[in-house]
Length: 282
Ligand SMILES: NC(=O)c1ccc[n+]([C@@H]2O[C@H](COP(=O)([O-])OP(=O)(O)OC[C@H]3O[C@@H](n4cnc5c(N)ncnc54)[C@H](OP(=O)(O)O)[C@@H]3O)[C@@H](O)[C@H]2O)c1
Ligand SMILES: *[C@@H]1O[C@H](CO)[C@@H](O)[C@H](O)[C@H]1NC(C)=O
Ligand SMILES: *[C@@H]1O[C@H](CO)[C@@H](O)[C@H](O)[C@H]1NC(C)=O
Image (cartoon, rainbow, N blue to C red; front, side, top):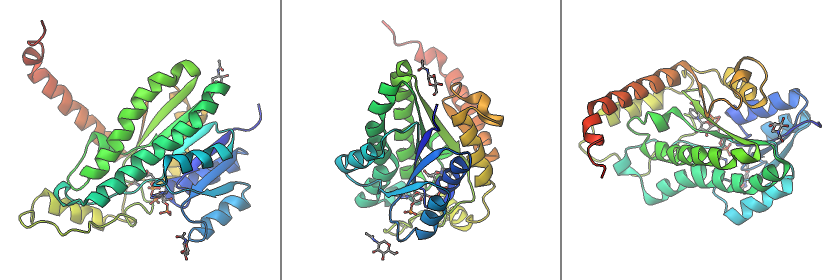
């Protein structure tokens, strides 16, 4: 088999750029996408120097436009929906435009990319779709409500999709990163509207300060995170054993702990209401 082809969105930075370079180093073919090649000239140079290609793609483009660009890439074996950003703010505070932009980038864009790549994967009976989600979906904390919603939509869709495309030998993996030391927290958009009065000293205020001050201090090493993603996709190395076995790849101690806590909470809730839940059947 000739070397596999990766298509990786958000290749200008962070996870996306590191994964592009790692796959190229392994001798695979890589097409990365960035929003603006001029703005991301340094990343483009690194990817091209390593033998990769870069195209321009904004996740907020129309389905038609995304479809055309993805079809032009040709064969894709590993599709990595990685591009994304974080709107940090209270739910009450989000403007219509901010909410739309968050969902467009983190959900509709990945959906349209995937829809364009899927026919080829089904026809070739091979393919892996990776959606980079966030622990924020399963454990949404204050000030990440709109972001968590965008990732939640992505995850619910991915789970359904996994069952739909399994007969075609296409697999789906949802990556659940905790806090990783990328550009992520520096790139977040501060909300346009001020925090409404009354939220001072609540969890909203505290979490906002926490996120704003955490850039550069995140516990996760993105190089190691990308190693695990690469392994789970290709079946090599430490995480290779998980290929095709898990729907969710949890990376980071913080993500792992929050997943466990969330799950325990859910099981506790279930136990408490068994009699209630089972009381409504005909
Ligand atoms: N780092 C973390 O703590 C963390 C935690 C959980 C989940 N994640 C997820 O991991 C993924 C990668 O993030 P990262 O940590 O590598 O952050 P990053 O360094 O900020 O990289 C984000 C990438 O997404 C791109 N992007 C943002 N908005 C876009 C749009 N509208 N269209 C196209 N591309 C867009 C950025 O491109 P530009 O250069 O053009 O802005 C950049 O390449 C994201 O989906 C994020 O939600 C990260
Ligand atoms: C791309 O980035 C360059 C440099 O930052 C900027 O001058 C240019 O206007 C951007 N192009 C678009 C289409 O936004
Ligand atoms: C399924 O896909 C894997 C790689 O993802 C490939 O090795 C295998 O040959 C495929 N199986 C079939 C039946 O096409």
